[in-house]
Length: 324
Image 1 (cartoon, rainbow, N blue to C red):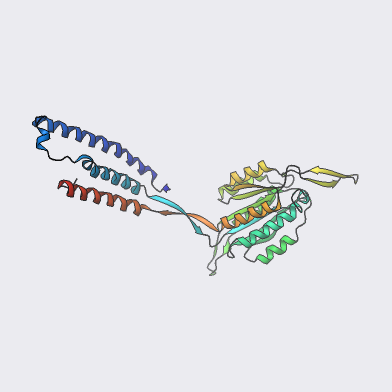
Image 2: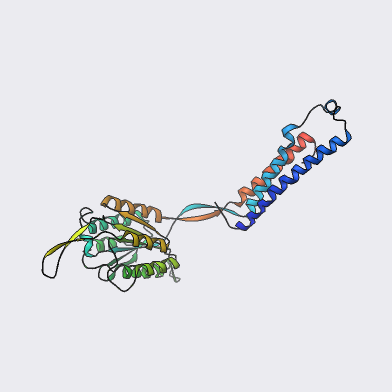
């Protein structure tokens, strides 16, 4: 629970003050009683004592005060509401290291399979886009509701070249921020957007630094969900300048991807097998289909304050013949 006016919670300082005042009144009442009566004769004059009932109405008044302070601070509850329209831009690594077979059958096929899972999980009104990067970044599909375009582009992906992750993120951020036409043709608008980054290596090409783009995404309120694909022992075979095959280690750069997610306000994941990366994409599809909204629940606490006040007055009237 959160509050729209948290500064008003300072009103709780009245609670200990009210308790001190009530304690002072009780001590004064006992002194006044002792001043006019002989203590030895008091038991014979009183036939019944209110006991705990004397303190219950004031206690209910104290609860009413607490509820009133909370109501003045305008409490809010966070609930999940369906997201009707959004941009999801997939920024996918297709560098040569994506041919590594530590993720079966290989990293690139696992990435394609997971991306297709995402297309099935998000609502049909969501726009999906596809950016790829190797030595350079390329927009394969601008954000669209046509899933066949995405699936067709995914089927054509081939892994080769370096890793221009920063340039890929820059293209993805541009696509996410591009306004789309309104359904009624009245103009354009920017949709809520997220970027889903999948990579398996360090930034080795291009002109932009990934962390710089992540900061820009954070300022634009476009979170990046970064998935590190592969295992530390992943390797690919490459031919050197003499034509000989060499086995090159290609571990994922998990630390950079974690920092990208943190700077942008997103979340990072690590996937070391095909089923895991598909699960991540499926969960992302479900997660991105809703958004968190704050609903004010002031009326509940205001109603509680009134209920405590009524209860305190009613009990005092029935038991002692007076209001409090």
